[in-house]
Length: 420
Image (tube, rainbow, N blue to C red; front, side):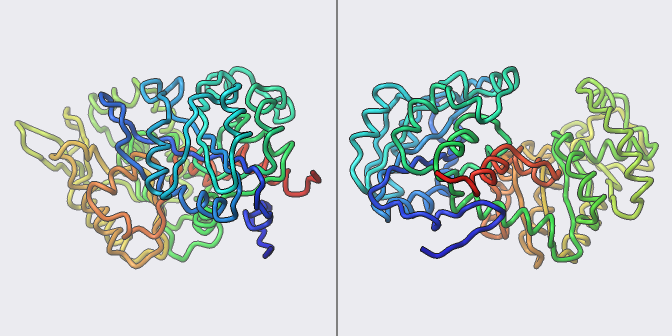
C-alpha cells in the first residue's frame, strides 16, 4: 500500500480493508423540508460517495454511522431511511438500512454483512450520549466514552474506523473521538480534502488574501477575525451583514435605534469593543460598508453612512460598497467567504449578496466557502463549480480557522501512533 500521511492523520490507503469490517462515520446531516420531512439538499451525501466507493472497491464489509438533526435541531431529528435510499441510487448497489443504532438488530446486520455490502445504521442522535446537550453537560474524555452504548456494542464487531465527518469535527461525541482508542483509524477522502483546502487558506494563501465575513452569526466572524488578523493570514477583511453594522458602531456611527436594538437584544453589542480594537490596530485591513439599503413603501433605498442614523432596518449593503468589495475580490489571490452580505432571502435585499457572489465566481483567485447559509446563498446566485472549494463544514470550519484544535483532529492524531 502507498503510504500517504498528512496532518498527522493516517489516510485511507494506509490499510488493507479486503474482507474486513470497516466502520465509517459520515456527516450526511441534510437540509430537510419542514413539512414533508424529505431531503432537499443532497450536497453532503454527494460529497461522501468517493470515500464509500473507495472502501467498497476493496470488497470490505461497510458499516456506516451518521446523524440527522439534534436536540437543538429537533424538527430534523428523523430516521435515515431516505439517506440510505439516496446512497443506494448514487452508488448503484443496495445500501441496507437498519433503524437501530447499536442494539441487537444493528449488531446482527453487521455480523451478516458480506464483502462489498454496506449497511447504514439508525440515526446516531437517537442515543443520549451522542446529542449536543449531553456533550455540553457531561464532559467526557475519549477514554471515558469506551463504556458508552455505541462504543461497547459496535467496536468489537469491526476491524477499522474511518472518519469522513470533518463538518462535525468540533463535536466531542463517542462516534467522533472514541473509536480511535480501540481501532486502527484513518481520515476519509473528504476529510483530507477539507483539511487541505482550509490549511491552504490559513497557512499558505496566495496573496492578497481577503476574508468576506457577513451573515448574522457574528461570533463566527469574530472568532476567525482575531486569528487571521494577528497571524497575517488576512490582508483585508470585508465586513458586511451584522458584522458590518458592528464595525460601523465601533467606528462611531449611529446606525439607528432599530438596528442597535436588534444587536443589543441578541447580546451582540459585546463585539463592539473588540471591533474597536481591531479597527485601531489594523486600520487599513478592515473595510466596512460605505452605504446600506433599507425598504420604504416597497422600494429599495440606499443611504450613505454619512447620512446615518435612520430609523429603518438596514438589511443589505449598497452600490458603493459592492463596487469597493468587487475591487478587492478581483485583485485577490485567495478569497474566503463566510456569511451573505445581506438578507438575500428577500428579493429587495438580495442585490449585495448576488453581486458579490457573481464577482467571486468570475474572480481568478482561489476561493473557499463554507457554512450552510453561505452555501445556500451561493447556490441561489451562481454555480458552485465556479468556487474553488466548497466546504461542507460550518462550525468546524470556523473553529479550524480560529486556530482551535478540534476534538476529532486531536483524536485522529492520537490514533496515528497507537499500536492495535
